[in-house]
Image 1 (tube, rainbow, N blue to C red):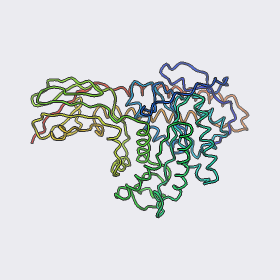
Image 2 (image 1 turned 180 degrees about the horizontal axis):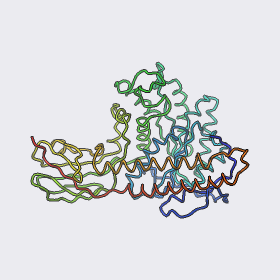
Image 3 (image 1 turned 120 degrees about the horizontal axis):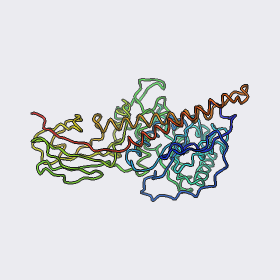
Image 4 (image 1 turned 45 degrees about the vertical axis):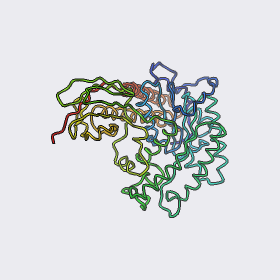
Length: 456
C-alpha cells in the first residue's frame, strides 16, 4: 500500500452509517475545515469509558489494531452490554505505524484523513510496538508525538484512552515473557503513562498483566515454554511472537475493558422452585409460568446480551491460564434456583437444550454466559459475524479503495475515478446495511426458560 495519495482527500463519510443514514458529501469531494469542537468532558473515574453518542469511537494503532480482533471484542462487548447506547466503531489501525504516524505519509494530513474527518467522540491509542524498535533514540519522539495525538484529538472534542503496547512472546532465557525487547517496550509503556498523567487522560497498562499471564501460562503448562518462532503448532498467545491470536486478543480486550470500568453483570435471576415464585431479578424482568408438574418454567426478558466470543480453540486455551477469568470478570449471566427436589435438571431455552445442572449448583447459582447453544448464543454469534463483516467492509472502503494510489500513467483517468466512486458508494451501503442489522441483533428478547428433572 503506497502512502502518497494522488487524488483529493475525503470529507466526512461516517454519517452515512449512523441511525438516520442521511446523505452526506462524498469522501472524494473537498470540504471546508470544520471549526474546532469543544474538548470532550472528562468522565468520572468510575464511569465506563465509552458513552452514549460516541458516533464513532475510533481505534487508532499499528498492525495489532489493524488485525481487528481486540477491537472487535471490545465493540461486541459494548454493543451487547449497552443495547440502548447510540454508538458506532471505526478501526484506524495501520500495520507498521508509530505514534508519529510514519505509515500515513504526513502526521497532520494522516490524522485528519483517518481520524479527525470521522469526528470521533472517543479514541483509543495503542502505539509502541514499532516505536520502541528505535530504542532510546526515538523515546523522546514517542513521548512528543503521543502528547501531540492527545492534544490534537482533545481539541477536536474526543475523549482519549492511551493503551500501552502489548509485549512480545518469545523464548529468550531470563527475559520477561522470553523477550529482551520487552524491557524497551516497558520503558515506552512507562513513558506513555507519563503522558497520560500529564494530559489527564485514561492510561491502560496492558503490558504488565499480559507478561504475567504469559509467564503464568508457561508455569502451569498451558502455554509452551519453548517453541520455534514460526512453529504453527506451538501453544502460545501470539502468531509469531508479536501479533496476538484470538486468545491473546481476548487478554487484551479483557485488560482494556476492565481498566475502562466495564461492568461485569449481564443480568441475574433467583427463582424459588418450591414456592413457585421469583425471589429477585437484576437487569431483567421475569414472570413465573405454570409448566408441567415437577418442572420450573419462567419467562425472562433481559436488558442486555452476554458477551459474544468467537469459537476458536485458542480461546479455550487462554481460559485455562491461572488468574485469567474474563467470564467472571466481564460476563456474568446468572441463574439461581432454590427448592429443587431432584438431583439434576436439564435446562432448555425456548425448547432448545442448553445444559444439565445439578440442583446443588443451581442453588448456588450458575453462570450461563459460557453456554454454546440455544437461541441467545445463536443471536450473539450472528451479531459477532455481522460486526466482523462491517469492520472488513470499512477496511476495504478506507484502505483499498479510498486510499488506492492511482498509477501516474493513468493520468487521473476519469473512468477509473468513476469506478472508485461507485465502489465507495457500494461499500458505504454495505456498511450501513450491516449497522442496521447490528442494531437489531444487539437487542435482547424474551425467552422461555424451563428446568426439567433428569431421570436418575
